[in-house]
Image (cartoon, helix red, strand yellow):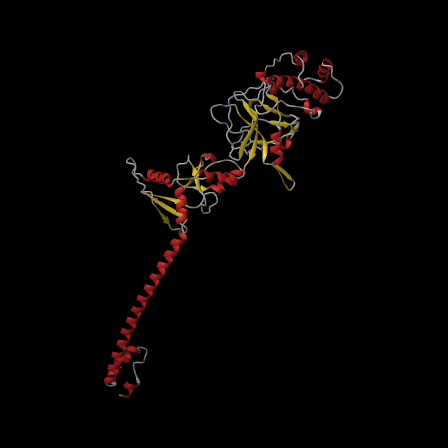
Length: 467
């Protein structure tokens, strides 16, 4: 297979005059346009050409590229792709590429890209390959080629989803770029000034992120590129990818092409549920660890307050989860967290702002129990022994205070009423005594009280004048 792939790449790099020489040497019709000549030459190769014809191919290729020596080890041969059975190629401008340089001598470092939660990997069309170019200029360009098997074409075609004017595929051909680092799985990272053409058509790339600092070159978000709409869904026509970028000193990049199946947030949530709920004892142990008195600390923590509201949506938790890498007890809602990352994948914990990837998420069993039994409270308090108690909200506390004040007001009103009643009775007693004295004495004894009560009367009263 590698041997045939080498000769196929040699034939595809020949010009019209060289193809005519090759076909004439093999006794085939050498008239027609370039894509017709190329098709005839590839059919000749597929049918099993003689050693003499193979030598002629090598001779023509050496004339075309005198400094290039080809071996099977130099080729980017997709492990899952068959020999390209080409019967028809595209227009001339799509074939006039820089002689498929990367396909002739790429490098396959031991690079692994990070697994993307919203995609299941079905096949590897082009394994991670270093972006390399013959020229030493700053702006570089290279080309790749791959073909689809009948099964892969069927998988993509049957996954077509037409909604309105937009046509989407659940099974996609995905293009990914990353740094050529082998120390750990790499996230998507685009080379500077990247430009991609698939089968001669420009490929749209993710837009630049706003710069965080002045003078810093803008960066594209770390995402894969869906090139399904530009790929030929054919088992007989190969697909070409031309990549151009700006080289950087001390930094190299790699590219890979995969066949993937896109997943929805509901599928990821279901898989998280299937993984199971974490035993509540794990969280209880974490509580006890946090509340264990530190002999070197002057302040002892005896309780922990935790909210039952999701920090993302400020709504009550439905499926409480957090990352295994997080050290806090506070949970966030799994459904909302996954949905937000479906739109904009960051996978960052909303509580501590640390990385919280999907594969590290767990559903907290202790919080599931608390949410089941604590239905009228949005905040709880953990104690040293791992037990918990509900904490009243401010609204509930105000209602309790108002109720207490109302009772106190009633008590105060009652006391005031009793005091005023007692004072009233006392005043009535005094009046009764005065009346008794008044009824049992002479008119003369009435004068002093009358004078005291009516100081405004004239000193000469009718009674005195009478006397």
